[in-house]
Image 1: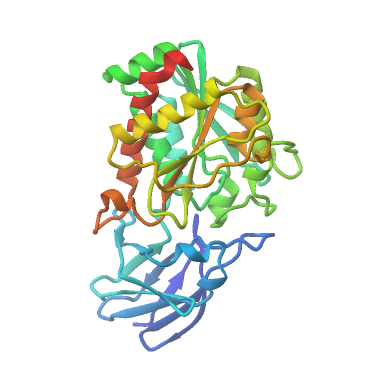
Image 2: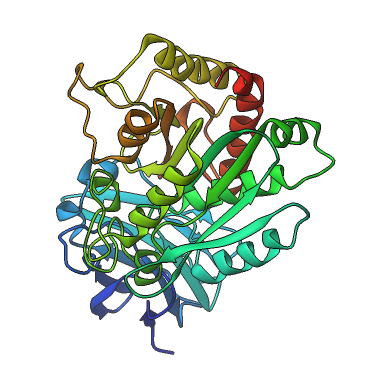
Length: 372
């Protein structure tokens, strides 16, 4: 039987350059209207009985080439469980294989979070007691920007994810957060809901998600560089979320992302905003210290550098939100590789661990919410 490779589905991305014998030569397709690429997701049919080798030959020109050394491709035969595939990066080529045990095999940069799963999540959580659903606006392609709100407390908390659509771990995290917050038998989140009102946007970039983009929306715009002046023409996704934040105010905000290169979970902050206060900063640093003590899946040694005083990039959401509202804002980064301090040789950093980390973040927030 001949081999076929297909990415013509929700969040799919790959281009076949050739199939010779048992070697499949591939390249990742750039985001529409931009030069970004790194996300891939595709299916192989006719794989049974043949040990195949796959070579992504344009890996060196991707958005973040340092992300490839030490990285392992995710592979699945049922689209539910995603295991690590043996992977090699050499000479600018990402190479991995399948053993021939199954007829159909799927590969992805990280466990996908499709729009179909997103829609199912929204439908499921919107039916939970005390949850309100709002469509804050629409993307350039006309897709809904969904927001789920819950809680009765006076402190407005915003949690939002997937400004960069290829960072699918961010929506796995959001799924975990929503499940904890809607568990009425959970005393930690019940207390949180009494003190805060949560607004959660699980996917800010549904167009990029569907198109198989790494970083941009349908117009090739990086949404996390639009927060200073979003427009309906370029970035309606940011505009509608920022307008909703203006309406509620913000006491605490977390923007959830994934990092290609650093093999760890870490948090980036808002150092360098013009109106930085030490009290504001202490809440931010205390959150990190508590989370590091609370979870083996978080650390503070690895991460991004800090902006110099007054030099923060206010086009980015965490800086803009912290500056705009005088609040504690932060960007949670999770790895495409693994959290090496607590590694998993079979699954790497996985959807299940994303969801557990969301629970740990909520537990720490519950300890600190009174001071926010």
